[in-house]
Length: 373
Ligand SMILES: O=S(=O)(c1cccs1)N(Cc1ccc(F)cc1)Cc1ncn[nH]1
Ligand SMILES: [Mn+2]
Ligand SMILES: [Mn+2]
Ligand SMILES: [Mn+2]
Image (tube, rainbow, N blue to C red; front, side):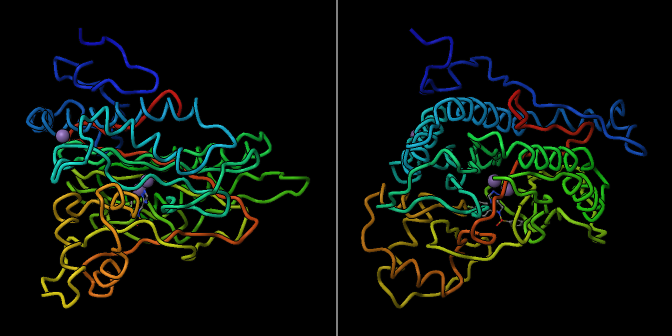
């Protein structure tokens, strides 16, 4: 018989739990000021009704994200390896989307949207373990878990921070409120610079005492939120998290990842450590490759990921071997972009919270909102 509720660990296909095809609505927030009319405007409501497939795909991805992260928050413990933590999340996403991602092209209908980030302490983003990584989670770590689910290329990008030691609480609260400020300020016609200014105002009103030393919480000024397009994790608009005069506006129909980062360090990140995250550029040049392994690898990337980001472990899982020369050749030819880990100074602590929001014609929907964050 078909189960009627999710298992532990989560392995029940989500569409079996929602036979009607109607998935839970995210947090709906009315637009304000000159856009308040949209709530009742017939034309805007009609436009919204025309988008039901898009909305159901997004809401399905969001429910999968909630169910997998709920399990992760309950089951992640010190002593576990970063590899088993990442793979536990990935196993859940693959099961609930129904796309194990092992056959060529399977990831096209749904599945993992980008590599599972498990970012410790001063590492803010884009760190996923490569094969052989032995790192274990420790009691005093501050871990940012950032993972994505997609259904038909509709990407839900959401992240949270886990810490076992309560001394980090103010750091996590500062960033959680920073992200909520960003979500509140976002909307149709909102200017990106004003959102950044408001986020910094909130975030930097906090301080945190760690091991007897007090730090002001700083926004990481060179990290940003971003717009999301179908199959494309970053469409071209960046949402600043510090004071900015960027007059660019958010527009009806756009999807944004609102993410903020706080730090006890410099409030600035650089590339460091071995790269795990890669993605084929949407505007990749069509060139004939001199390195045979590069063109072979490009075929595997096109078939299994398209323009969705992937990591080395996903290539290993597909049975690819000795691909580093080819991968580096694709990077140097501008076909694949490398996303190395982004780190603040050693010894500092960083935190992140992220949600994906839909700027529907009549209402703003925080699609990935849960009762956890
Ligand atoms: O830092 S970003 O490159 C960026 C921010 C603003 C403009 S582009 N990035 C997009 C991305 C890049 C690679 C991935 F594998 C996944 C996502 C933000 C992000 N990383 C994780 N979650 N969200
Ligand atoms: Mn499949
Ligand atoms: Mn993310
Ligand atoms: Mn993001």
